[in-house]
Image 1 (cartoon, helix red, strand yellow):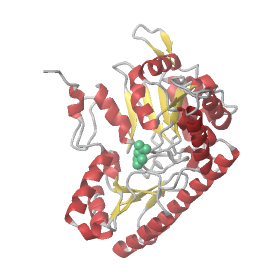
Image 2 (spheres, rainbow, N blue to C red; image 1 turned 180 degrees about the vertical axis):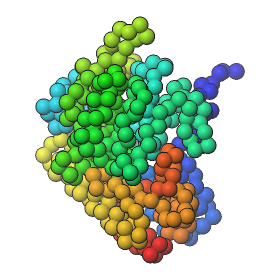
Image 3 (tube, rainbow, N blue to C red; image 1 turned 30 degrees about the horizontal axis):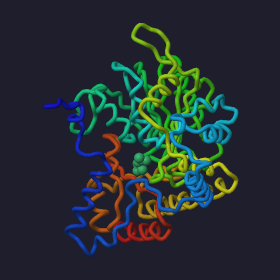
Image 4 (cartoon, rainbow, N blue to C red; image 1 turned 180 degrees about the horizontal axis):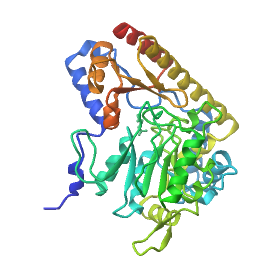
Length: 410
Ligand code: MLT
């Protein structure tokens, strides 16, 4: 019989969102009428239609593919130059990132998981707690951890606690680690990191020859002028960081799929014998072998996000979701809950009412309000006692959620 990768057997329960889906289906099966009222504020999935500029560009690209003269087959695995150049001009101007540092992909979830292909065994890996579960589970799958404990923590990982006391930005570890996952604006806590905090992380990474895997998927939602949008705004980051970005949440591409990684030429890893190797070259090699590029119409659609019309339409989407976040923050505050996030990120992170744990809150909200939220403990042990409300929804749904919150807890 074929042998399996036994690391998969270490994984705890299901991936968080399928597990939520399973519980919602169970509720639906047993409560047909109440189930018709369910409003989903669990997974951060966009609800508003694709911007017009994107749709137009995609239609045009499809027409090109329907014509002999303009038809294209395989594209460059790393992405078309038109999109790589648009990314640099719009996201990284003046930050020392070049078009050939950009690797276009089918999204950040895949990228943050796949990136482990190019890192060897034996790295000490730090994750925040709570954390986007993909970082942890992909490390488990590839064999970078030991067994998990009852709270969902895996032996071998270094967990950096993100708490209300540290504004959900972890303290610099005392020990040396090799890879650090940071995500700001943060999923799930909705916190943002200050320039000084990121400077401290870059200084640590340089001092310890570590690499920061910086997930900036929610950059477009930053509202405050002094919040850094990219790790590369921090001096020295070109030598110690790579950045993941996505079109999912700003451009509404959760179903369309497109994202990218920026990997500066200066970023190096090492062989066991101490020889320095370019991370960008390894990733390029990996990409050529395992990926045939995001589709042409999708990349044209992504490019259109950077057009004048696209920027205005994305700004309107961001405004819509962030106004939702404000309403959710206000409703939770009004019923006396302690609220975090939702200022520079589309997630509102809320302390559970006294005496209710995260999954207890999930059940209460589902059963009494027919609202699906995400239990904080699903993002890690330090998420216990919190729940996350996603602001990705229609205005009518968000207003209804606010009403129901007040009815249940007011
Ligand atoms: C979330 O809800 O945490 C996100 O939608 C997950 C993702 O982007 O993969």
